[in-house]
Image (cartoon, rainbow, N blue to C red):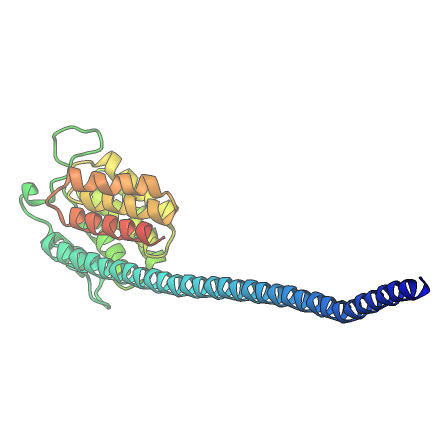
Length: 286
């Protein structure tokens, strides 16, 4: 009986020992599996973080590329604006030069032979009188301020001499003296056949010195008092130019369009169309 119990006890003891041995072997294995699982998780997290960093770096690179492209485009726009400004200034200078040349032709054609330096007043009056057309119908046809169909009075010797003096000052670049001369002429000879021209060149003397408000007033006075003058198309053009210089963009464009519609075959209309095209180009660039 004792022997049987001993055997059972020995068998159970052996089983307990085997179980204990198995547990000793299994615990390190479980711990190792747990460590491996944690390492995998850490590795995955590192990979995700690296992918996010790469994505962020790529986004930063794209933003930098866009900024660079924007800067390049801004540079090109500034270059185009500078080119347009240079062309505008060049055209303005060419127009002033052309206007001056036409004025010289006008002076010669109308008999405004300028007096050379050193001539006596008597010779000045004599030359002016000789230059005045014998037939009043040959004088520039200008409608008077009252709108009647009667021609304005032809310039006499004194009027012609006064006009010549002011015009010579304008041609010589003495714009202050020219403006005083033309104003004096207009006050003394308000209904003379040269008065519309005096109003125009008075406006021009202020326009070239960038006194645009006074220039605008002179050109508008010409148009209101002498709408049939040969200078009317150029005066209307200069009204538009002056309005643009005064930052009255809408009014300036409307005036230039009026020039093209009212005087379609004139030199003023061609200049107005060219200015409108440049304005449209500037708007497109901006």
